[in-house]
Image (tube, rainbow, N blue to C red; front, side, top):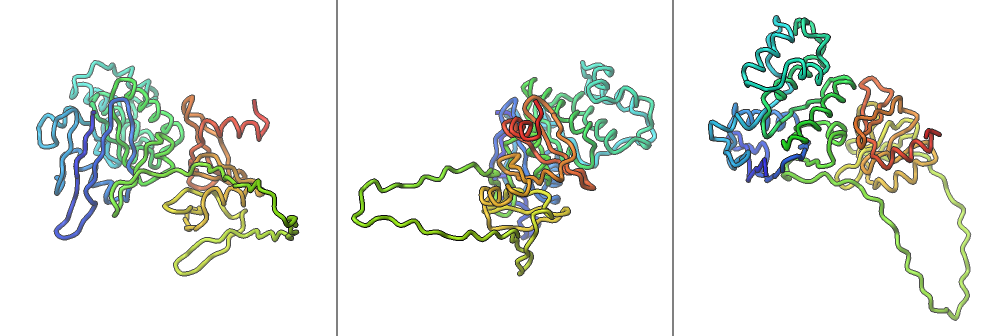
Length: 347
């Protein structure tokens, strides 16, 4: 086991910032923890040894957090990482390679992270996505047993997202373990199905809705009275109810961007805002099917009229990109990809 977290807890005076939790990540495996920004930052700082936990312990390859060797087996990529903005990307690669005495060549690293055309670009003039790729190169040169990424896909373009997934697959192929800390569930599910929520109730596996087959019991015994089939006039109700504070709001299907599975129900996403619904995903899928909605993932139902692109990350990893301002990424499962192709007439 590469990573072992045992009863890890953080308090600030009498305030519990996150409750004690356990987690194990084995070699060649990636796990994502979905949490609020303050918890995410604390966990990242704990792994880089800039902050101590209140209770519990972390072991990486059997080396505890308190050991000086911990930093040699653990690499952390922060969402806001310090860089020398007056130096070029080439200068940074030379520094990282020398710092970690890496056997990886600069050309190999620049090619993998697609920075070869930017080597002489001053970092201060690079885009956010290019800076993020440069952050990834540091972990590539460091070659840790555990790579911890804090919001690796935040404010990045699709090409950088693809590069990150390729980097993760490379690390996993070398027997490394990867831990992703994020507040974006879509990003987490794009990379891995092993996702946990860390909140007031502790660390809880993210539950994905599975299709349930309803079984109807049939009484085969004959009745002495003939059965009369009742005729009921169906009532079509086109609105989808959701909660907002103490109100119940009724949304038209055309307003909805997508629906995400939530704790005990579903979250209806409209224009970047979420509205809790008491309906289960299967119920919403049935109600919204006539309006062009598609169950693209066990945990997501998407309005196909909002989809702009279908992205293939790897042979088994796909995403739908919505036509909104933030270019929202929705996970698309492998089995649903085949179904979607058939729906839109692609081979």
